Image (cartoon, rainbow, N blue to C red; front, side):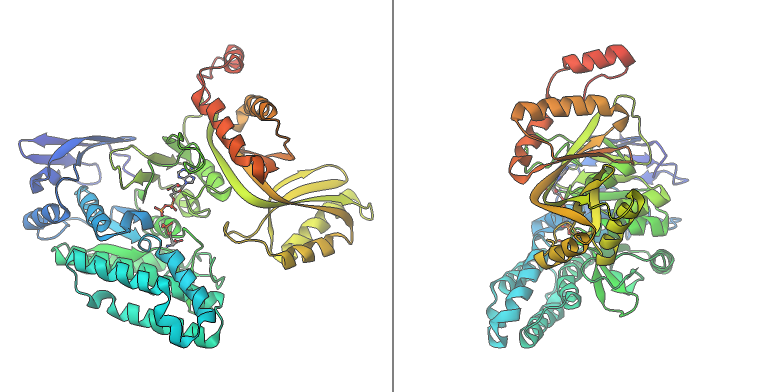
Amino acid sequence: MASALQIHGVQGNIAVSRSLHHSKPQIGFAAFGAPVCGTRVWGNRVAFSVTCKASASDVIEKRVAENGNLSSEGETSFTCVMKFGGSSVASAERMKEVATLILSFPEERPIVVLSAMGKTTNKLLLAGEKAVSCGVTNVSSIEELGFIKDLHLRTVDQLGVDRSVIAKHLEELEQLLKGIAMMKELTKRTQDYLVSFGECMSTRIFAAYLNEKGVKARQYDAFEIGFITTDDFTNADILEATYPAVAKRLHGDWLSDPAIAIVTGFLGKARKSCAVTTLGRGGSDLTATAIGKALGLPEIQVWKDVDGVLTCDPNIYPKAEPVPYLTFDEAAELAYFGAQVLHPQSMRPARESDIPVRVKNSYNPKAPGTLITKARDMSKAVLTSIVLKRNVTMLDIVSTRMLGQYGFLAKVFSIFEELGISVDVVATSEVSVSLTLDPSKLWSRELIQQELDHVIEELEKIAVVNLLQNRSIISLIGNVQRSSLILEKAFRVLRTLGVTVQMISQGASKVNISLVVNDSEAEQCVRALHSAFFESELSELEIDYKKGNGSVAGVS
Ligand SMILES: Nc1ncnc2c1ncn2[C@@H]1O[C@H](COP(=O)(O)OP(=O)(O)O)[C@@H](O)[C@H]1O
Ligand SMILES: N[C@@H](CC(=O)OP(=O)(O)O)C(=O)O
């Protein structure tokens, strides 16, 4: 990222920006006549921002009139990746606002990653399910298909884009659903192909809109530009070969013909079968960080519908507050333990290449958002965020002492390995182990009863097994160096609520303490913990702590 200090100042009607990335000052947005509404401070960057009162077309037209296109002479390649999720591009209006937003950063030459419009992915999945049993002749009247057609056609019309940009995709989508109806089967492979239509259409519409307005943009399907993945349909992993391939393609295209790149999020191409894959729900975040790593970009921006990563899920507790700074480890832990805001694997490429990730709100661009970096000042940090993962299965496994302790744990874990089920939280004693099962890397998948029965059958060969379902993991993400303080406070809250913690684990990663409670009690616990840690005045507990260490200024 810009280790640079960027200051955009206004001179008359011209905004001038100087960044250490560029050898010369650049003409900023005020030159395009968009009104300046205030300053924006992002870590070590300071910039004026553009009010959204100027329409997208105003900003775009003026900008193109000045520059011919978005790039200036002497510019080498892309400067950042900007990912916009489904809620950010849910309608024509939203797409216009996103265009305005992108163009309000004239110093950036972005690669834009888009998700499918609004809830399109969910609708495609539902349409696929219905097609399995509705019969070929009824496919055309599947409600979700109608919804998707209406939404996309209305959007192209409202943006003034030719319907031909998505006509073929809509036709093909209907044919695919008919094929599913005929086969009476929806495999994971077909499911991935089916949902890929969402991102393929949103990116085509958005690129066409920019081009229509005279801003040169080029659409890319990720599976055509080198996103190579495993063949794990619905939850594929990006393979290393992706990085050089994607860099070569995007960088090469920029050099020969500069244009904003508009790339489909979420999608890849299976290494063995060459079929379209998806990276797990919410996978566009991962697409963005992978592109950041591939091109060694200074910054990855992830634009959402909330003011950054929050202190807890706002759907559970609306008083959740934005967290200004996070480390990659904290963000990864938070995502892995269920915070929907980031894809569980998305921090990996950013961490590997040490590229800062900013989580911002496309509905409220002035909000500072969350900056995620390798390290941050932890001297005052206690608790950062509370995450809830519901509907977790817990197993209590007590050895029948047929095996020694080492043999016992090894055998238990080899059973999970064989069955391809990963374990989230573990607590052991000499003769027993309690653990929670991660249904898969994809947090929305349910463990099916058949799989569970099989696990238990295998474990019962060496142990007595107690199956506990409908549990929740509450993860306290923060400074585990302060675990005594966190635990004392957390347990005081839980005792007041009369909640029994059924398992506790302090992650070796030192950023997470996990508590397992009943599903039915979990939300109430999160709300009470949030009030205690983030909303109360400095308590007796922290004052005592402060006396001892001289460092804690509060719990948040
Ligand atoms: N800790 C959290 N911080 C922020 N948002 C959260 C958190 N936990 C859950 N969410 C939910 O995640 C949503 C944003 O993630 P997502 O829907 O995947 O965004 P997008 O589709 O824009 O990529 C928010 O609207 C919010 O409801
Ligand atoms: N459209 C995909 C991929 C994605 O990343 O979406 P979003 O950015 O809206 O979470 C999904 O719904 O899972």
